Amino acid sequence: MKLLDTYNYLVARQRKILVLIGVDVYQPNYTFFNPLLIIMVSNAFIYYIVNAYSMFVFADEIVPFAYCLVTYGIGIQVNLE
Image 1 (cartoon, rainbow, N blue to C red):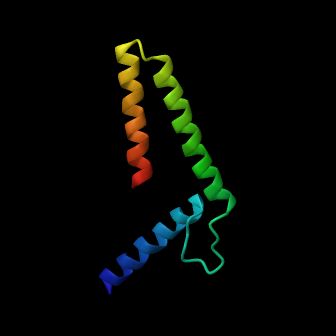
Image 2: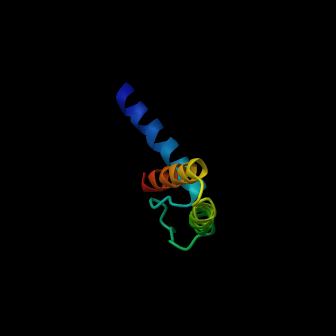
């Protein structure tokens, strides 16, 4: 029973996190257009726009441009997981 208890604990913890970001698809009344999910997607979109603008502004300087590329890549990796 120890393994089953661990599994149930991990699933419950994951569902709490999914509820916080608005993508708990296991709820019977789940809809794609909920406020939490819209806020999260809007924040990601704004992050990409601001980062792309920063890359445009710092195109002449190597170090800040590389920093913008790194943060853009981190944002893509985080959103893909």
